[in-house]
Image 1 (cartoon, rainbow, N blue to C red):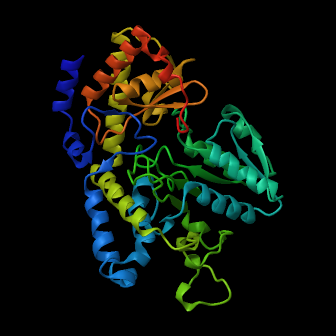
Image 2: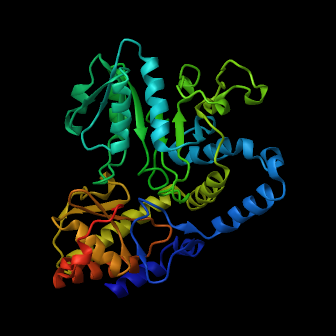
Image 3: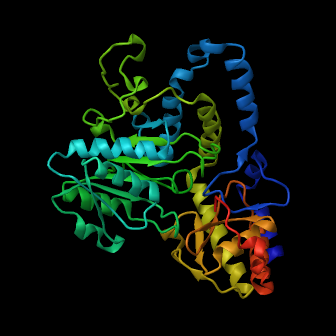
Amino acid sequence: MLERARCLDVGDPLKEFRERFDVPEGVIYLDGNSLGCLPKATPERLEQVVREEWGRDLIRSWNSAGWIDLSSKIGTKIAPLIGARADEVIACDSTSINLFKLISAALAMRPGRKVVLSEPGNFPTDLYMIEGLERQGLTERRLAPREALADALDGDVALLLLTHTHYKTGELFDMAALTHAAHEAGALVLWDLSHSGGALPVDLNGCEADFAVGCGYKYFNGGPGAPAYAFVAERHLKAARQPLTGWMGHAAPFAFSDDYKAAPGVEKLLCGTPPILGLAALEVGVDLVAEIGVDRLYEKSQALSEFFRQCLSERGVVLDLVSPTDPDARGSQLSFRHDEAYAICQALIARGVIGDFRDPDILRFGFAPAYLRFEDMAEAARHLAEVLETGEWQCAEFRQRAAVT
């Protein structure tokens, strides 16, 4: 397996990009779907921002270094990577805050309807944001299993809110079909792209999506807590009104008017002062993804995940795969169910194979193909087989839960 893996690495058209990331020696990093690796260009870029733009030019850098336009500039770069127009995407705030903004905007655009429809087991922040608005009397949360979502779209539904790639299983929704079904019922659709953006092809405009949000620190490698991004279809830019009317979303923030007037474009989604250091780091990661190309990344991630499955099979590892077996039906990850998934994950981490655990019993491996090799797949499979065969996961140290799993 190792020899075959090395042959595949020799022929890998993306192999040169591994050198553009700071991958620690002796680590096989299978958690890029939670936090991407550090691009080697990021520290230098941050050094420039800190020492030159902030340290030397100080407040002048809002103009001279273009800080004031950085959110829009990065949104313009993300747009083609998710099938959007340049004027439809903005990089700002967190995924959670952007969800709040766009759920609120959608509800206001569908007067007489109060229901936000989602599925049980959606990523918690998506459900929590609906619940928070429900406590304010602004909406009603309705959950339906994914196979029954289309039937749950009735005249009370204002918004369908779904995560394109499920965070636990990696299962993909048919974005086009569900968006069409929602529109047929008179509802709007908000897609969470946190586990899709930068990892697999997304065509928001081709699917006629209304709204979307996404994360900057997973496949876009923007760093921990990196700014997120938000999409509003051009046809909705005039009607969409977000509730967090901070000064940066004003049509003329430096007019210092007492009364709020929203910016006419997607900039209306801005709220407070943009986090320039976070945006600068995010831009490096976005530029790398754009240079490599999402289609090429997804093609390699599918090959990596299938090779990993082959390696596990050849080593006789039997685990309950909860991700779709068809690589076209899943995102850039594989998830397995095991009663001792947490302890197994910790035993692997002790060996330098970093995946993650999702409660209650999911062992999750992410495939970030810009810096992963086929050799990593073969070695990760070997380590997993040995951990299971030897039972080393039973050590007490591996069973003690940390705050972050």
